[in-house]
Length: 143
Image (cartoon, rainbow, N blue to C red; front, side, top):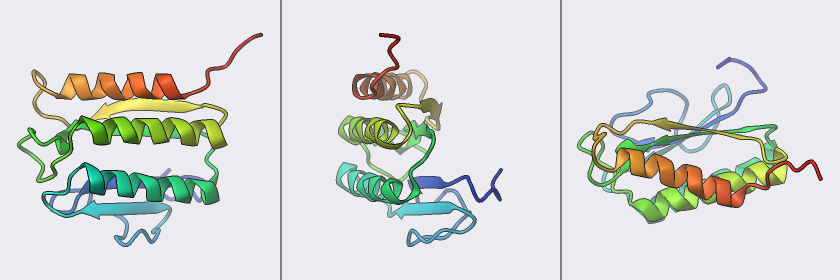
């Protein structure tokens, strides 16, 4: 699928450790767009990248949105050098829901990713993201 011209991947990640694919500078390589954030980047940086992805979605017009939320970017996770807090995750979830509404008739799949502190923030981040997307997405109605 990675070579499919119909698949676009937008990745916001720690420039130090992930993902090793695509090109930085938001230029696509085989449909892969990367936002490699510098060590210490926080919610403001995260939200700015999310806004750029929202702008890109207006050009791409996705049929479905897949949101994989890496909880390892949270400020308490030892793996990453990023410094995200709940506000950034909530904002990303809200914007993902808006993108799904605008272009994909509300179709969105959500998955948890990353997060190596299962008894701390990881489950809470994932449940927060699901809750925010649920609040945002217009669900299908039979009426």
